[in-house]
Length: 243
Image (cartoon, rainbow, N blue to C red; front, side, top):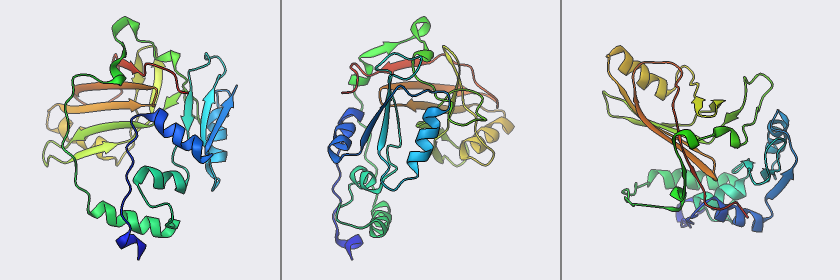
């Protein structure tokens, strides 16, 4: 069967711009201008995201934001794009592709980290009083959301007892120019880790990454206890706008 003989064809994307150029070549990129971050972007993302031929949505000239401060949704809501990301042969059907990927995961071998001194993501850094999170589009996705949220995040925690490392994706809510809060539901591994160290009177070591393609927020701190967080973040923005 194809799932056992097809070779993986991985493609390394240097950045989100390169991925967008490939998506555009595929005819999967849809530019939307003038949308409102107050519910409209969320509604368009939800409705179009249910379609089998769902494109990548790139919002620009968002109301109350300057042109160039863009927001992208539905990156992988399509089987063809998922095959490109995972290196799956394009000729394999969707059902067979799922079985093929299940076999690939079983053969997964992690790559050792490579430490570097610099990178393009650090060419534009804002710290301290120069940080202003409100310059980026924060969409209120759902009617009952309490404000603007940003998704596509990674929170890395380690269980102090077993050493188990968890990477979870959570939404971050904008509070003001320098503050974010991250709610996490009951039953998540991240909350379990936090509750474990709280009961033991220890401190949880954690790294947070909010990735949006054009901008990364990075936070790594040691936290005691449970509750909402108030922190200052470093903004690591890409040196040039998407083309």
